[in-house]
Length: 334
Image (cartoon, rainbow, N blue to C red):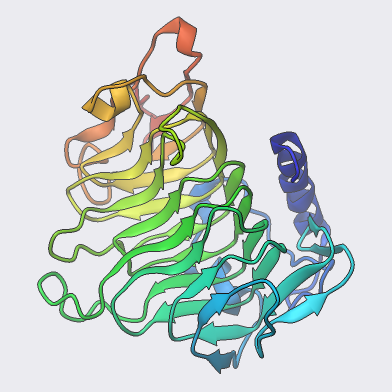
């Protein structure tokens, strides 16, 4: 498993590769697409997801489980290490490319899985679009989209309800240039070493009994409840929650970096993790928020109640808040 430093370096290299490319046709492995994203405010539905990468006429499949030892019509077995859009994936690994799924995917294979130019839109109620189980290999969700197929009937009719689009419980994940929408929670992270880069999360939908978080980061290890260092990065992404409750980001964990993003909506746009967001227990530490913009398109305070809450300023926790502001340049202070 790669270290966070390796993942961070790969993310930086991928941006440089994207800037240097000059073609807009579907990229081959190791051949990224030209689009420079300097800040999450530049993200739109037009520059994320399969269509933005030139993938059309996706092959249709139902979905299901992906386990070790099984073969699947939508999976290509790749024997060697391969570069996808600037991300180096060790071989052997499994590639799912140009596929559309009408049911959820449940991933437990210990091999790395790359989903690229693909769509997971569950047609019926589901707790997730993609679940990556603990112990699974690294997961790459590139130029793809996920969520419910439709939100018809919300909030009271739950026949199409989806609790969370991406449930990332494995040890390493990258979400890049993807579109997460039509779901209660966008991305739930309880594994470590996850990167969400240049991704759009919007159209969060409330079904009866649900709350809404654009990204929810878990605090404790499932085995013993111990605090663990998650090492999560959210960079150059846009998270929009039109609902007047919960958050754009709900942070419960150490080692979280939020940089160059655009956030708007929710009850509080960011829950910062102090005293486990009011539920008791240790505060989140080593959380860095820098150069983020808070939009007021839904509520005058960005979130219904405000832009940020439960941010612990204790020096020993090493939480840093730098150059975060509203769209008009006025500073946002926790």
